[in-house]
Amino acid sequence: MTTLDLLVQNLSRLPGIGRKSASRIAYYLLKADRSYLATVARQIAELPDRIRSCSVCGNYTEEDPCSVCADPRRDRTVLCVVEQPQDVQTIDATNEYHGLFHVLQGVLSPIDGMGPEKLNLAGLLERVRREGVREVIIATNPTVEGDTTGLYVVRLLKGSGVAVSRLASGLPVGGDLEYADRTTLARSLKGRTPLST
Amino acid sequence: MSFRTLRTFHYRNLADAEIELSAPEIFFVGENGQGKTNLLEAIYFLCFGASFRTRADSLLLRHGEREMSLQGAYVAGAERGEILAKIDGAAKEIRLNGKVVRDRKELLAASPCIVFSHDDLLFVSGSPEERRRFLNQTMSLHDPLFIDLLRRYHRLLKLRNAALRERRRDLVELYDGELAESGLSIQERRERASGEFNEIFRPLFRSISGLDGELDLRYAPSWRRGARPEEIRSLLGSRYETDCELGTTSSGPHRDRLHFSLAGRDFSKSASTGQLRLMSLILRICQASYFSKATGRKPLLLLDDVLLELDPVRRERFIGALPASDQVVYTFLPDERYAAFRSSSTIVYRVEKGAIIG
Ligand SMILES: [Zn+2]
Image 1 (cartoon, chains in turn green, blue):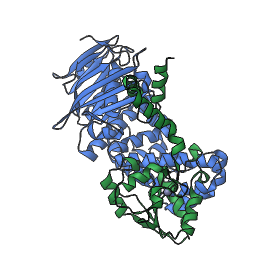
Image 2 (tube, chains in turn purple, green):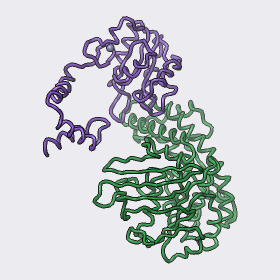
Image 3 (spheres, helix red, strand yellow):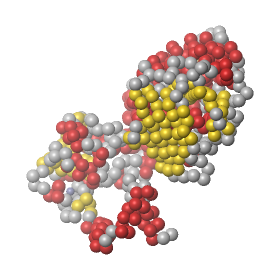
Image 4 (cartoon, chains in turn green, orange):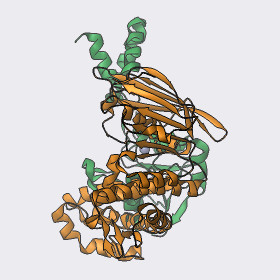
């Protein structure tokens, strides 16, 4: 295999990139100027060293704690529980939410060997107990796994005294938060349904 | 709906072609293996984004090719549209009027078709799973929400079964409640649909078959009729150990059964092959009628070699009972007396070695 073939093969592993796009990108890179190539290569190589998980919420960050957790203007009594770090950005971009986040780092899926012990649930309980949280909003994706994970969290928080609500209405069934448009997301944040705990 | 043209490229054994289909009836006439059923399959593929003969899309590629495409221009009521289906290696892309279809159920809104084929025999004499497939299909054709419900249920089932195999009681119980809710919802809908379906099926079967007595499609749910979610949850809970040992969930809509009963007896067991065949054809007619009744739309009908096996009297009754449709596409063997079924507007194509020769 040639260097170019190998590059195409690696690029086509990226999400949303098929073989055709991968080879287009590879040919583009072949013609691009050296400084651009060096910058991109360095940025990619440095990713795992520069960016880590926030020790408080699990969001991606360069500083620990992350800018969301460190922001003094945020309402520290509300926690929004999401599946992945990218969901933090999606919800934040609505400008409808001013509380803090908690990233589970996945969903329950025994098919993929994802049990509760693999999720950041201990951290969630800890925060709820110690940090004066009054409300938890569950914003897992409206998929079967997201729903049941949300339900698991609801049960986990039972008896903890916090109000729990579920962000669900208006989101496309089986969809991803990432792809929900902002108005829909904003609407569902406002109209979140309180669950009895 | 009806198709005006069909274009095939690198598809199965067919020569690349654009085929004119602007007629209420199309006949594809040819010996077996020449490609006439492939043409029906191509139309079906455009309607549903899948084949009725195989789940392996790779079989649709012409031998040695890695790309194929099908394109069809259709008319549905006042609306004209186009469907494009492409397979490139392992990737499949379907476009409806230029827009990529993300979920195959979007196609149902544009272009339902009903296919009559030999395999339909499985609906009446096959495994419980194959019989359920008929009911699921009938309901899904006009109700995308039912598709969502089925998908949700089966996903939950898969998760629960995985949790059973790991003996994760906490997770199993988490899924039990959800499984009960969505399962009962499927059960209720199936109950209602099978009742409505019977209203169409019973009289039609009597008039075409000429048999005495009422033939009933009986729906036998796995869970108790009218059960509440709590009851099902505790049922699931009580079977936890058994289910763990089996490694699978032993009750629920995935275990529902369908029977055909004539005067209280299981007809599938006593019927002749001819009678079973006839029954399967009538089921398809009813499926089409049920769809039309629910939506006010007319489906496209595809009949794959099925007239051959009926005696002349029943053949006539069968054709007379076909529901109103915008288009019917038939396949025939060359020695069948298909001329008797054609009208002045029928297009007849001879299919030989994958090509249309006139
Ligand atoms: Zn943080």
